[in-house]
Image 1 (spheres, rainbow, N blue to C red):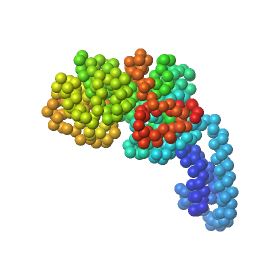
Image 2: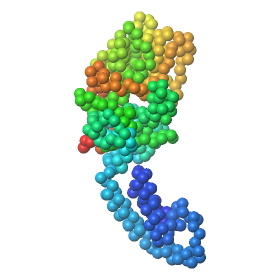
Image 3: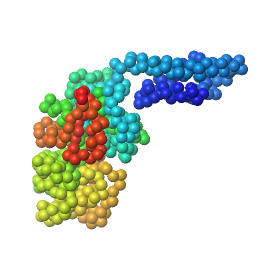
Image 4: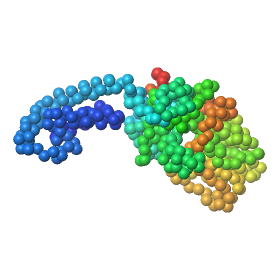
Length: 438
């Protein structure tokens, strides 16, 4: 019995990261053994059949023969697996697989099946998000291996489901990262980002597993897809999801003529929020960070003033706002110190939007919030901002090109993940191209 179980386990290793193929292989093992009377020794089958005494005697003889021929059986099954993999290769695709925490590898997996209302998109570019880096080591619990990550992407329609309208093969598209049902109370209210059955591409958690776009192909519902104008490159379009996140954060507050805003954090989201505030009519936008290189980039992108967060930030903000504080503060980091800085530098009656989501919990200066009657907003993903994001990027009002630190083939993904995970200086957005070769 132990040897039979070992054979099953070894065959499973040939397809460790493809659950459908693993199942097929396990069934193949069971059928192969059943043919020679060994099925009662396979895991999960012992005790399911009562054999008569003469069958038991025959089984003992065959069991001895099986032990003698076990190496040949392993080889036979391995060759069958190789043939099956070869036959399947025309339906396989290359993907960057998180096989275990902090281990990424290029492998072949089946091309995803297409539903009636879905698009099969050949991925041209996919950005590495900060949430992917935080999930890479398991710290968030939302990238449980094995998983193909990636949710900031664009590409070309390769196939369409029978019920899809408005798209054709060859269309250049981008798509939302949030897959919403369109039927729950939140979706009906237009808050699709809060859908009760919400899934996110490239995320696996306790509730669901959805492979993402670090692969040659990805399947998406047609309702989350958008046509991409010709003047936007695929690598730029890979930042549309982040632009939509920034626009959603800004949309939560009513910007008035003459408003002055403070952005805490000059990472990708912070720099896009900065531009979204300016596009929405903010008179002055101040940006605070600890990294001088990012602050220079912020200034180049039009910040009214850039501030070192390690200095006396409150004194500087009061000086820049005639002693009042910022009308709006948008926090794009997500730790206690930066949340407190956003609140402490907001004027009485002002608003603070929390976008950063690094820490599960933070400590708030509660008395400041209450006594100064500051309104706090949480901002989650986006909710219909993609068309506006496409418009602003196409017109040049939001510029993402300076935020792209590198564009690389998918094959180089493991190396770039490690560099981002190590917090290598001067890296913002890295875009991977599944169709490119190293």
